[in-house]
Image (tube, rainbow, N blue to C red):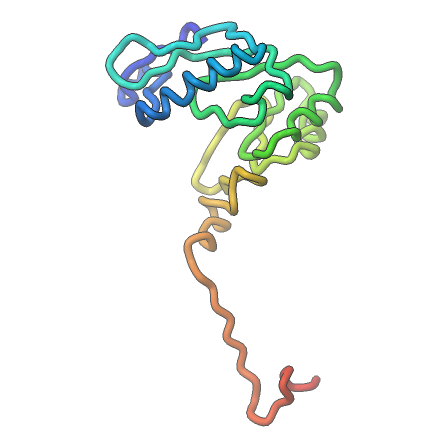
Length: 180
């Protein structure tokens, strides 16, 4: 995290761009403060970067229990929250203990086991051995409070059109159509 260079998003050397607005920056700073006040620990970062624009230090939070209010909040910025659990079942239970479900990640050396774990997680997109990924030919979207459909790919076309069914029955057909 310390090696992520903040700067102009058009510069290829930049790994960390600004947030979209000052409001977004202050929301994240408030969420980090809330996490800390409710027992979480800021392991790295947690503050505004001293430069022009709405930059937040890459931040790592630990010790975020289900009682911590940010456990059930989305953090839209360079903030990662880590929690150690006893076993795979507890990890899946924790991953599903959220009102959201846009994306999830499973990191493992055993790809088949990763696929099995991914199948148990309730999320619109799950990435194995990477934090996220996107391509125009793949559907993008979440479940629960993180989405109402899909964008991109063929599935996305239907999100932007109103479909209409027109059924024609021959004259003098019974009310529910011709009998076959």
